[in-house]
Image (cartoon, protein in one colour):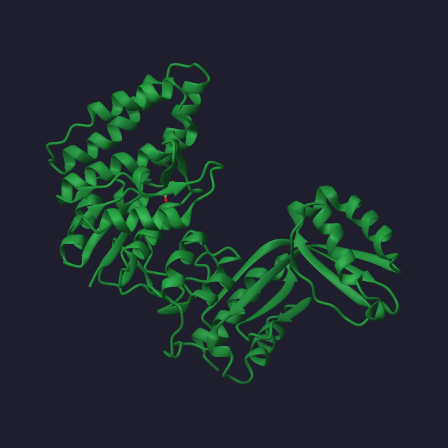
Length: 439
Ligand code: ASP
């Protein structure tokens, strides 16, 4: 059994957290490849080391004295080294970083040092080999991630290591210039390592015990999802559920490697398994409820629209030309409604309306703002009659008016549009009916 274990910033914020991580790794022989993030927040008002590095580098670029900022970063690492009673010096590394900052090595390089240094500490603490991500995670000359090269380099290099620490978040171009993934990108590194070594499981350790059925800011103590498929997760994540970096699922998904989200502070919890497919029946009919406020709908009406070939394309072209992505396009015989993000749309509103008039000469165009979309997702819905009925009677019960319904033929999700002010009430009502009362 071979596992890749990735630990997030809060799991590595100080020596005490490092010790928990060490205990977790040592408790299973299979936890052989470790991907650390940079130290995160120790308390809610604290600053992540990655953010300290960005700010320090900005000062360096502006020609300001950045020695105080660099010292504060160094202190974070030495607090960990001392707490772990390690005999490890990072003086050489910090000298190099200072020189590279003066030479303006780039903000990606600056941010990457957070993981690089934490990886050094982790390797010393565990007695594992340190593998610099710059030598195994490859970006092309345009700065785009090169998955084929990376897979080759990683698998070749790790075949030679029994046990290794590979820092998350960054890699390098052929010429050595360091590049990072987007924020939270250590998740992606973990996934790439899991793919390269053909891991049995990719464990992603964080500060929650897995994915929750819904947002804990809306429902108190929501249930944990035991097993979720990659498709379900995509449906939920696009509505804003963030535990895992979106791009982290693709490398392992292709290989059929499950991801197990675990809690460093509660290692006894099983967490959530993310799998390609499963015959395990979900505990509840629905797997999760996610949603977001802040959408606008643009309703276009034109008599005999249904027989006008290319109508839909012309409308969507107007949005494309303005660089606005659409979320949903429900339609009727003479109407078509486009749902877009309010913040993307508002400033281009008049150009879009003019564009629609020019493109299709509609009878009229009507708009509505302050709408919320809720996605009710679950593989269990496919084989269960009456799911939609239960959702809508629950919403009627709490006096929520439904503005839009969209169910794809996959029967994996139902999207519901409501007014922003009804959003929380609606989510609670749907959660109650499927998880609490289960009627
Ligand atoms: N340290 C980086 C960040 O704060 C990457 C990560 O933690 O995954 O975004």
